Image 1: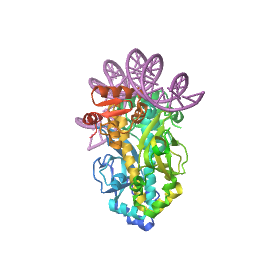
Image 2 (image 1 turned 90 degrees about the vertical axis):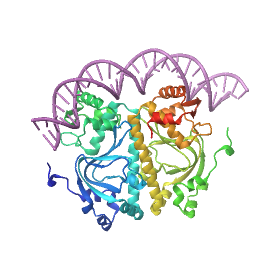
Image 3 (image 1 turned 180 degrees about the vertical axis):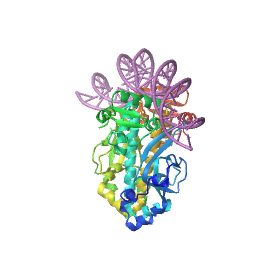
Image 4 (image 1 turned 30 degrees about the vertical axis):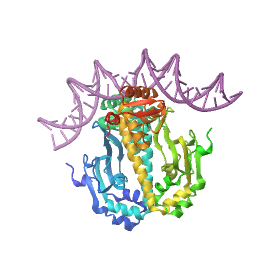
Length: 233
Length: 233
DNA sequence: CGTATCCTTGAACCATGTCAAGCAATGTGG
DNA sequence: CCACATTGCTTGACATGGTTCAAGGATACG
């Protein structure tokens, strides 16, 4: 079992340079992040679809997956969030139950901002609010692109695309291996297909020397060709 | 050919009670809507994906469809907008080229707000900005639900769902006929399928006495059963 | 070290896409 | 106002990508 020292430490840097860059030092300190940040372990659920939230979470480190559960009980992954991202703001601002669930994928440090505090910042800091608006716009853009892709591209294209997107978002190490490791089922739940289809297509990609597989580690051997398959430009 | 009198007239009411409800009378008047509103005819394209916008459009009346064009050239309809809605704000705020195209579906009156004016309002009116944020959040929520639906539901389920959604958004007349009339292809471009599939499924729905068809007019005979088929609750 | 989760492969099925062809409706220009 | 062109609608036949089910092996984890 891991002890505390091995867990990700609170790092205010990621937060200070993100959404909160427009806050004065005083305002930032008033958020009390030093006290309201907690360690969350892999597998923990922060909240579920339908829950009422009492505030938002800011990610200092780690990875959190955001997903919806469809009518047949299958999960649809909406996005992954990492250091600097904020989650739960839609529900809090709209004063509605959460429309997604969130689960920790990699041990994380999350800082909590109560609804009241967030509303106060919004009411008094236009730059902050506009930044939040920009974040929402960016997510909206991504969501719309994703709708188009899911509606029009084949599973093969979408799988190649997701590999590229994961590379762009989480990076690769010096052996070209994706830094984020997902289960086959999670990959399937991003692109909206069956786990078996992902397995078969990954095998194909491997045979075609586009990727290499070692458990959940995926090494990208030919990014250019994957990009072409994905119909990305 | 239609003469001017038959075209929709400018109606500031829809706008005053929407996004602009937080503006003082003076601020609202300064938008100069009486002069910046124009009539747009069915089929007109307001802007295309990739265009730089010089401002946003507010819809006083009519219907505008917002869509993206996929890699194979097929359109994916993202949403329909009507009186009180605002379009183009994502691109303007993010200072990026448009990520969608927009086309007039039903003759419309649109009021233009230049980028500078919009930015001025945002910088000086927190309530307005927060409202815009709420609009973005709502669209984001809808987009995420749509992603889940497209990824997990069958074409049959999605078609039933779209019929219900169109009913909720545009209403039905006293014969239960949807007020909005779309081509088969447009229906297909919402749910992400082939035109032929829509035609076949609509015929099936008709045979099952769930709907009645007369050209583009769709009469809903059994909303409850359609809702059940759509897996909506 | 045993249990749970995850991964893999094969086989069969079917929902949906594609292609082709004809008809209907709508709009336009002479 | 007619004739032609364009666009939209429909149906059939066929191909196939993808899902589902089943069963066994591998791996991870407490």
